Length: 214
Image (cartoon, rainbow, N blue to C red):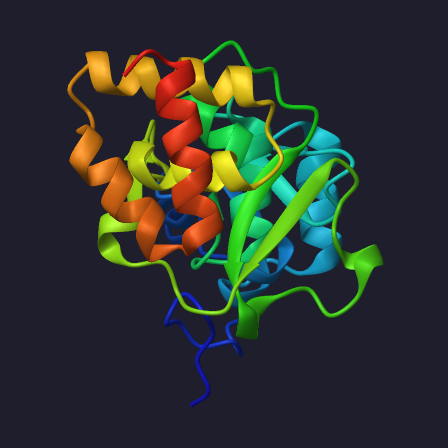
């Protein structure tokens, strides 16, 4: 029998509330319509539960919902991005700076890394307010961490991404100084990671270290 992303049969017709709850628990209370379909919730039943308030439809995220049992939170948008783009998506760049409480940056967009093979095929499939960064190579285990359950690039990876990704240098310098002061990274680690991203990244990090007084 064919199985879906949850590992359960996609032909299931009886709604399994316990299975849907377990899916949502692992995603901050959120789930997609596709995940609900896999455990027996048809389109009409989903609409019914939205009408009763049991499912909260997240706007403008078509097909993303939150269970009523999970209160609205500051990370709803982050969860919506991750469940929409799939298990390989990782919040990054200025969004990661904010989640790590590094610098004073206030992201205008939600930044997220996705592997090349998972990239959105059409621009209109990317919700407004989201900037998708495509990684030719998958992020390694040392590049990804969890913050409040959300998949986020590590402070080290985030510093290099923002240094070469268009974030204002002053904000990156502040973030760099904070990460060093907190012992999250060392200067040697930062310089090595920058060199691995190429000569331009190495040069940019050297300048930012000077700006940060390090």
